[in-house]
Image (cartoon, rainbow, N blue to C red; front, side):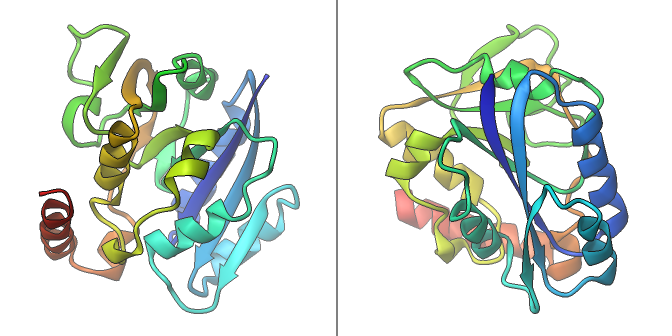
Length: 222
């Protein structure tokens, strides 16, 4: 059975976070999964919810550190026997029992990461593209639901902290993996509902953040 560690940074939003985690419990078959949740800044609702789930590894931040630092802190606690690491937003909702297993099934020696499709996502991971193969290669993956081989992460290193609060850090990961010689895939049979921008919109102006981090991404990779 595939062994996956899910990393989920949470900045407020106790209600949709609870819906996301409850849907993982209810609809994740064929995979041995564990969850690391990072509560990024004090939130009573999130603390009360995660206190009910003693099997979830929870990291508490009294003050917000942002998406990138929270994710990196979660990466330090990934279980040793994990084969894959899933970067998953806390504003998703899952209804397909095999959503994660389908993504795991896509891996081979050449594949570094796999993403699913959604109703709210950029690029080729939109579920509107009906004429594409069930599994196909892509140049970029969006980090709302990005499954990465742990051994690749171990070599590549964690997220680049220069992306600050977040934004384009997932495209940076995509580029870094391809420069290492790995390919990226989209699994179109794995669908996850995504509300979108629920945490970042509360922490900052998303348009400004995307613009600033895209400038850095372009500068970093010319």
